[in-house]
Image (cartoon, rainbow, N blue to C red; front, side):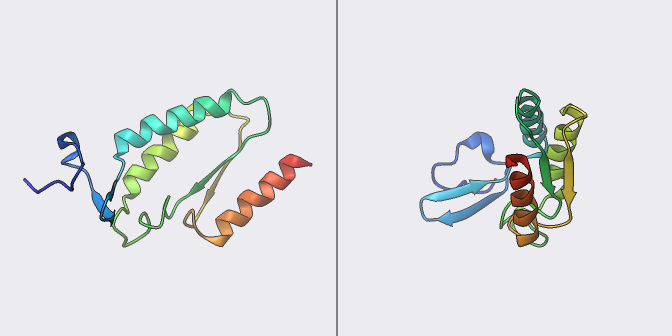
Length: 119
């Protein structure tokens, strides 16, 4: 059994960790976690009275969640994306983008959609 970073509960000993700073440890979500998160996000979006859309960054959800990075786990991300799509009202658009959430292309697409919504 590996040593857990300071402050990380034993229940998370099977998780992926990243020591961000001396007093900050990041813990990667699992496919099961992400499926739950995806269902919750979809349910919240379904209740929206205003315009809503989902943008899914297929190459990662953070700086650490990118190909060849510490938290890259495509199956975990796919569990999130599938849960969103499976639980979302059909009229809510979903845009799957072949980029990371931090890429300019992703930010531009979301900003353009927001400006469209504001018209």
